[in-house]
Length: 128
View (cartoon, helix red, strand yellow):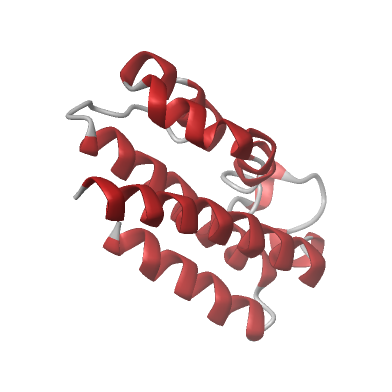
């Protein structure tokens, strides 16, 4: 979870500096790492990078965690779109990520990731 908190901090700094594509990526990373912390709490080994799938697959790991995190599926789906195209110039025809991503997208990504982190922190606080 500590790394997730550093990623959300990095996302906020990058957004303030106008580096929106990487702000979006670090927001996605923060959410991914936070959800993976829930897997580790249940002594399970997470696999993959899709935040939406990691949340969905919690159903097989811990029904209570899945029920609590299920409301974040749409936010997770938005963040999943920030995993590859925010970093690779060849993922967007004729443009680089810096030319495509805007402040509103970074703001939304940070907001969504922060909401996931807050819920995970609440869960971890109640279980640790």
